Length: 168
Image (cartoon, rainbow, N blue to C red; front, side):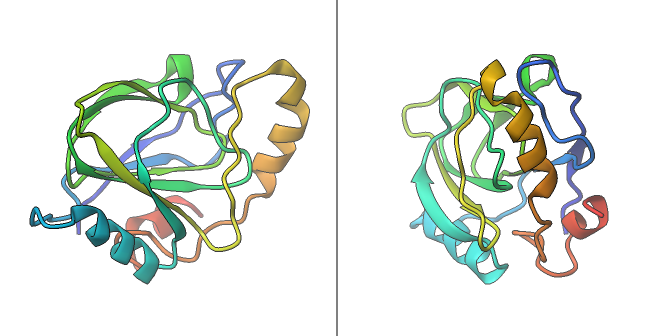
């Protein structure tokens, strides 16, 4: 089992981030074989009770989800991703990496290879919304973020994965 990097980001005034749940970043968490690697992530996430998967990239603008936690699994290419808003971190992601993003935590693609691809998914009953940090949305998103239920399993390691320890 891969131990994740743990990042708890403070509210930067635009991106609220999550006040108590850290972002988890698993480097080289999933072994890929080069044949439909996106499907490897789709099956893994689904089997660990993270549903509604999709294939694409990461939006090239700062955004967050107030109504859902999100997992991203990189299946091809490389990307520079900013996590946690303007005071967050910039990390280079590559195939096999997984990022578990709590509701409210900002993320954006700062640049990627032409073949960059991720699979995203969400805990059951959670549907992603896209928030941009507009001051008019501030009050309701803080309330919404606080009400997003915790997942029952880690999307990579299941019912005994590190997420359950770090998200108590």
